[in-house]
Image 1 (tube, rainbow, N blue to C red):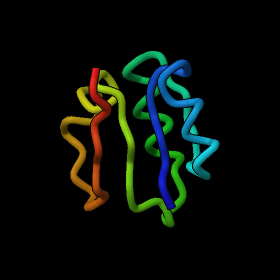
Image 2: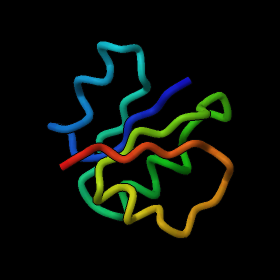
Image 3: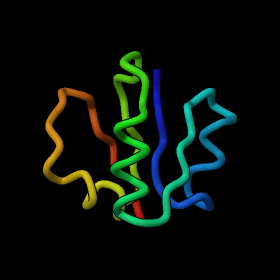
Length: 68
């Protein structure tokens, strides 16, 4: 399963591809969204800001960062 985390305007379109979308505007919201993901999620699509907020996370999931 794929999940997209970041600002709503950048991640909403991922729902069309079947991804689990978790809009998050602040670093704390990003971390909350990440903690709430189901175990089935193996790929994260992140905005640059979301990636920075999760910089210290190493849980084995593949993280893909969107271009600017």
